[in-house]
Length: 62
Image (tube, rainbow, N blue to C red; front, side, top):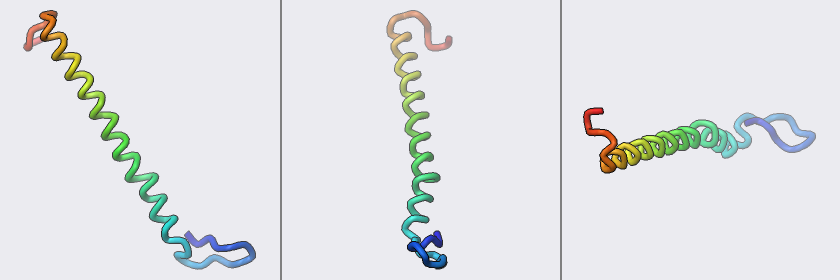
């Protein structure tokens, strides 16, 4: 990030904290969000499968 104030030229690595923010926002945050989403889907299917087993609709091999 080389952006500075108005009427000033760019300075190399002027706002390093903004670079870190974008790395976290676009790489790290989506990674954890997708992991949570997939985990919720897996848990939902497991609970649904266990409920069907308890209701006697299917056996464990189906």
